[in-house]
Length: 366
Image 1 (cartoon, helix red, strand yellow):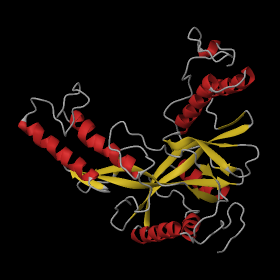
Image 2 (cartoon, helix red, strand yellow):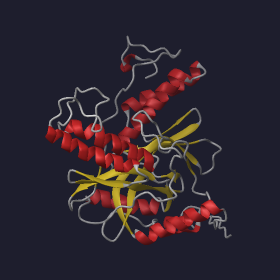
Image 3 (cartoon, one colour):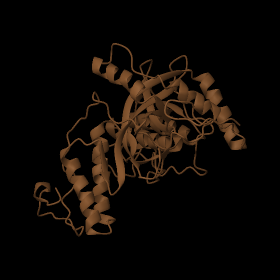
Image 4 (spheres, rainbow, N blue to C red):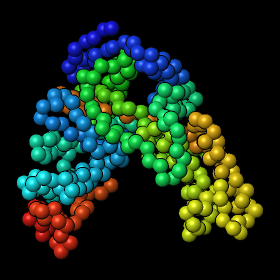
């Protein structure tokens, strides 16, 4: 075992796996690295991390790092504070502090604020996937977490992405994790397809946030037709099974309705496996193709199916969060949002009662 005490931009603590499970995961990661030597960078994702006063360099994810623009993460933080004020505040003073934060988030694109002694920051992560020499995106690894008994019911709920995730740049790493982390430190955008401000911000981030923290893998559906490029077909899921279940629902319920094979107003129990009465022979044949593809997903850990000329794959997504002397990187000046701050919930009074007779501008806490 070898260890190195580090600061930002230096070598992380490295520990050689000695437990059998850890050793298998390390070997699995090594095999994956040999098969997938390239990277496909999709772009930034945003969330919120919190740091208590006595936490050292450690932060905690409070809003999952899955949002497509900074304002979506701010809106999620707005809702987090509003519901905490409504349902959890233990005093008027605590509720006032939470509502003051809500009022500010309703009016300003705030990327950092301190509430009740805890520091909250909108954080930015780079989403990427490993690819092989033919451009194939990496699929789940044998050692990625899976439920012991897969639940395929539409009402099933798996773990949330980033639930309880601690961001600790000083946490020990396996040799391969440390090597990957160091190898990705210089990662920056390049090429003519990026605007000059984006390229400049990316190069600047390598200097201002020289270290990187690799977040746990997440999973999503990607799809393509014939030899076209892969495109995302879902949001991130915590496990590969959650992504497969999402694809099963898409193939049997959503796609048939989008393609007019099942009426939009059909009973929700009607799907490709249970077509409605009066289905034409042509529609029945098309539905069987969707059902057959979905059934293959349920026959073991299947990660790729084809239906009606579209290939659907369960992809393994990674996220890289840059880290500097003051912690995780926040949004860059060139990151844009699709909308501006706004009120998301009705006002609350100091006792936690919803005041539908007021607008946010009338509320004293604002």
